[in-house]
Length: 110
Image (cartoon, rainbow, N blue to C red; front, side, top):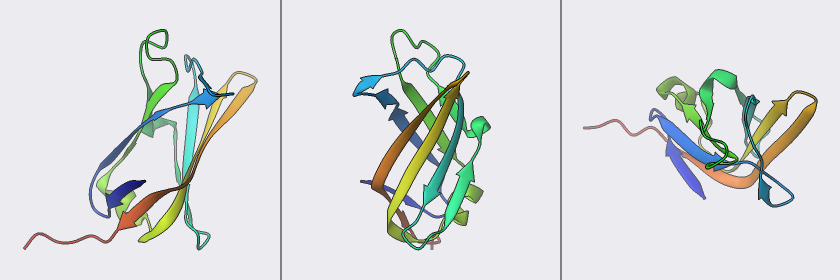
């Protein structure tokens, strides 16, 4: 289970797999969405993703980076899903993390 707080930055280090094996992400284009159980959906484009530069050694590894504004836009709650669509030419792969994210409220420093 991943936990982040509204108003913080967050970097998710993920591995894309197909049939249980990491896939080479060379030339991949990414779009991720975070979905909450209440139906809210936030999209994060390709510019917020980075594939590991050496896909021979680090096959399938990528990051999704969220800014302060991104995390502030997420609703507080548990049971959120992270879905990433990875497109490489004519091939599309989905990374789907079910109920893996909790967003905690922003707590100002006092």
